[in-house]
Structures are given as C-alpha cells and as structure tokens.
Image (tube, rainbow, N blue to C red; front, side):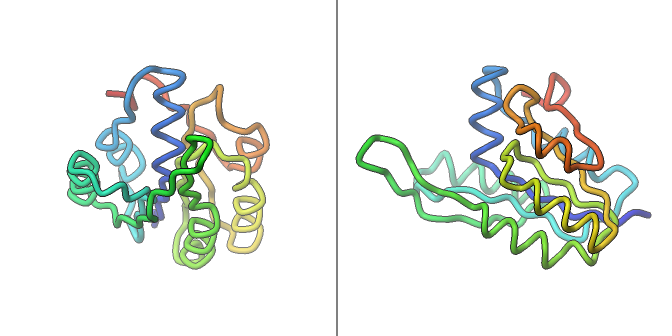
Amino acid sequence: MEKVNIFVDVQNIYYTTKQIHNSHFDYNAFWKKVTSNREVVKAIAYGIDRGDEKQKQFQNILRGIGFEIKLKPYIQRSDGSAKGDWDVGITIDVMEHAKHADVVVLASGDGDFDLLLSKIRNDFGVSAEVYGVADLTARSLINSASKFIPIEKELLL
C-alpha cells in the first residue's frame, strides 16, 4: 500500500473554487479519492482562525474526516485585504514528512510551491500530486507535479 501525506492550503482552495466554480470544495470526496488504496501517514489542513462559530464547525468537520488543523490568526489589513499566509509552514511540513511517504498530495494553486515539489521529487523520490482549480493554478506548479488533478464537478459540493 502506498503511503500518502496530504497538505491542504484551505484559503487558496476556498477562494479559487468559489471564484471559478461558485461552489465549495468537497473535502469528503477529496479524502476518499486521495486515500483510496493508500495509507495516510500525515494529513494537515492549513487555515485562518477568525474565531467565528461557522469556521469552528468547518474545522471540526475537517478533523472528523481525518485532518490535523493548523491555524494562524486572521489579520485584517488597512486596505481591506486579509493576511494568513501558510506558505512557509506548509513548506516546512512537506519537507519534514515527505521522506516518510511514497506520495505527497498538495491541494493548492499557489506557484510558490513549485520549487518545493521539484525538491521533494528529486531528493526523496516521492510522487507529488497537485489538486487545484485549473484556471487559477500556476503553470509552474502544474509542471513541477508528477500529476495534476483539476478540481471539477466530482470534487465540488
């Protein structure tokens, strides 16, 4: 059985699926697909802590599915945008856990992760699967993955 590590950039997935599909990501369908005939070694979802009840319920759903949740505080900028960048945290966790897996699954469209995927594929010989909304996933990230799986109908609520 393949050993898999799963890392989800929750903010990226939320906003890209909403923007392109006007829908929500189906974490249950995603979990079922990425864990089929695989042993989950590590599964982490990275999000922002706004402290609201609806968000806490969502985080509990993710925990129930099997994800460990890592949160950063919500920071509202003066221009109205929000900050909650997990790129460095995700990178550290992927590097730490990649050597214990056969496959690393990353759900994100962020091109900043292209070097990370190339490095873990070369250094650890792992396969790197990327799940992202095709129109909003960086071409460099798609090219650095062993396999790109677009987020479409079967992965949407």
